[in-house]
Length: 73
Image (cartoon, rainbow, N blue to C red):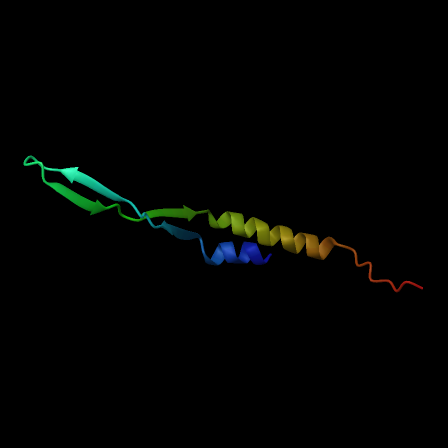
């Protein structure tokens, strides 16, 4: 239920992967120029219905489960 509620509140997040590479390019006069490769941004998103289904399933399991807290004698 906690994961489902979290998925309802936050419907996406972004992962930033730093690139440590440099790219060398040459122009018409054979001058070498170095450029940093930009960071890669990946966005992961999901539909809020997924969170709703997880919360409903968690509530259903919680409500329908039988308690077995009998004392062992």
